[in-house]
Image 1 (cartoon, rainbow, N blue to C red):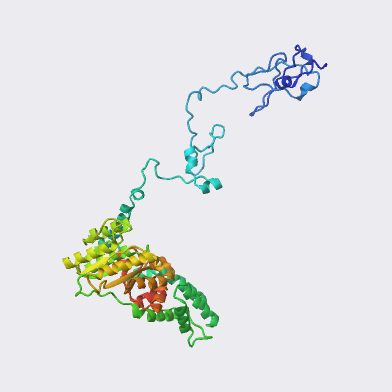
Image 2: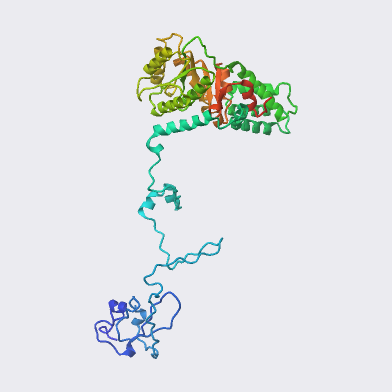
Amino acid sequence: MSDDEKPGWFGRLFGRKGTSDAKPAEEMPAEQVPVEHGPAEAPVTPDPLSPASESEGQPDFATAADDVSHVPPPVSEPAPEDPDKNRIPDELEGADLQPEPQPPSGEAPEPDESIAEPDIPTVEQAEKRNWWSRLTGDEPEQSTVSEAQPPAEADIQPVDAAAALASDAISGAVEGTEKRGWWSRLTAGMRRTSSALSDRVTGLFTKRKLDATTLEDLEDALIQADFGVETATRMAEAVGKGRYEKGISPDEVRAILATEIERALDPVATPIEIDSSKKPYVILTVGVNGAGKTTTIGKLSLKFKAEGRSVMLAAGDTFRAAAIEQLRVWGERTNTPVISREQGSDAAGLAFDAFKEARENGTDVLLIDTAGRLQNKAGLMAELEKIVRVIRKLDPEAPHATLLVLDATVGQNALSQVELFSQAAPVSGLVMTKLDGTARGGILVALAAKFGLPVHFIGVGEGVEDLEPFAARDFARAITGLPKE
């Protein structure tokens, strides 16, 4: 074959023989049938002089055999081509595909991959996937809330949300939905601390003689429960006194610890006393953000009213709109008047006005709320000093009680709070809240040992009944996991 007769690449690609005239059939290679997926069929040898077939939707490509001249095998009679090979069946054409019959219960259906659509997320779905799902390739969790559903009211009106939460808490308290004794609530609230301490004691004193190493481990356990170093050392010494190299049971150790805790707390377990000769008897509440001052005021108002006293509330936390609304809800539910101003008002002026109105009305108790402030912020502590100065213009002895509300979950930081708040206001007593949220309830013992301030109330939950006057013996036995005597 001459150079003019050799087919070019374009010709070989499409089965053509260059620009020369068509060669006789004996010089033409046999066309090869394109490979198709599916069951094998008999090879078809089309007319070599006809152009490439398009009936299959694809051109019949030539192969490298075009470069070699050879004699084709005898041409057999081509098999008749099925004209309906690629036709869509009548029952499927123009009709919606019906789902396959469901398999019996307990068997997962097998997807039909021949007609399945590729699972490509839309733009909206891709945007909803969080970073972890995009990083790992996991599918995002499907929300059960309709996209058309408007955002919750709490997300739009935080003031109303805070008032609603206060409303729910007060409703449960007023209606008395949970009738449990104080001991059961106390032991349930102190369970995290008592469990952690009891587990350590049981592990240390089971089948083991008491020695110096054991006492050091016990001291470490007490320090971890926030009893303080000095208190923990004294209590460990009490356990080891006269018992070295002797066996001692975990119950005996818990009994000794309970006795030492009660001895430390008994001097500060003092209930608050309302002097009826002073009207109003002014109680100022102070503390850091989130300690529970507003909720404590609401609970105390219910207790004082239950004693037959008239009460007035002053919403002195003028920096937080939710606190004002929350105190208003307490007032509405307990039928207690609330003195409040718009957000951002001067807190000292509000306290002054509330004192005057309570005096004019002959109110027995005036509870004044204040904004939460960090003990290391000099400007906010100076404002607290201003509130005290303004109140004393009406009564030099006011406030008659200043309650520092402490969050038990802050641990040793409570020591710093007592020290610095006592410099700005005449702190006369403590209220310890959220003892149910920590395993380090021994902080109350450390506070008693260092400051000796009266502990009037402790809180072990959200309900009104979960704030009760402090009793040293009950607390000591609850924190050590001992039953009530």
